[in-house]
Image (cartoon, rainbow, N blue to C red; front, side, top):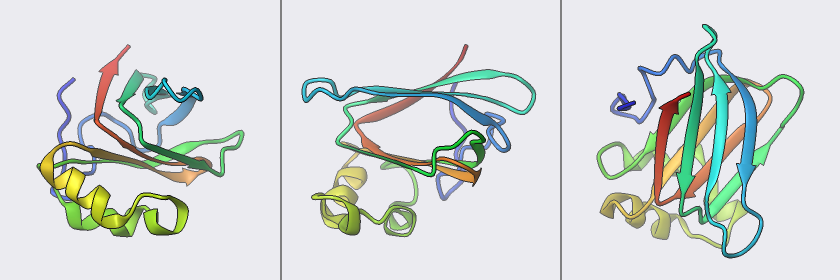
Amino acid sequence: MELELSPTGIVRNAGVHDGTLSEVNVGIAAEIQNGSIRFNSEEGIKFLLLLEGISLFNISYLGTQNVINDLFILNALNAVEVVKQIVGLEENSFHTYKEVSDGIKSGALTLVKIVPSIGAEIACICKSAKIYVE
């Protein structure tokens, strides 16, 4: 599925709003840098979000209800200025804002952010993110 992103990186065409997370997988070994997130749209469509080349992954507030408000995917083609607002990298990581911002501007990195209505909030810095309908 080709993602349709707003100018600020919000995924608009996947039916993500009010969808629910069903599975989060991230490799824990140093040599495994990939992960996946499965979620269902409110209409029951099943999605797989593949994250490749992960350098930072943060999940908080994971609970029994994990309802998605928005899914952001930021890369060289959209709003890099939003990065600092939606993930507090300098507070939570050894990565600096400049490193991540430069990586996104150059196209080497992508920021994926799942903003919840309730439950899990996810931020991931990776080399690429692809979404598939299952």
